[in-house]
Image (cartoon, rainbow, N blue to C red):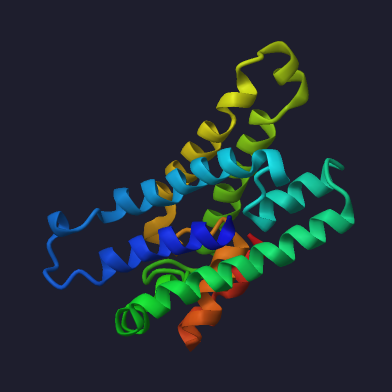
Length: 204
């Protein structure tokens, strides 16, 4: 799931930043990138919820572990596989478009010019909170018992939360809110600028 998530979303990013015409109408733009991330989360949570609970993000897995909704062993294995999947997904994107990938940042996250590392960290903290808060709300057992339609709809608010956070924070950090996604892109791109701010996407 994380492989597919990174593959689709980072490939969309490459299509926007690698647009030779420079025309905003020539690509899907920032809104399209946000829809790509949010839409893939919606699809993949829906597809994998019955297998693993739809875990695609170490931040979500860690939050559920802290809430005692997940064992330590399962949480560790999930996070390891999420990171490996993200690395493979970014690798596939690079394989398709090596020159474009290396010349346009590889979808790696970093704090944009004009913002401080503190700004980037704050944006990641708030963005990750919105996502994890939505996951907890959408999957709450008491709400599921009261409103039988909620489990069916759970992937929708989660994906929509990802979409909205991306709209807000793409201009600041490119939007991480998923340490595995940030790690995968950084490892495959593997240039200094991909690692300078990388700690922000784990701490945040």
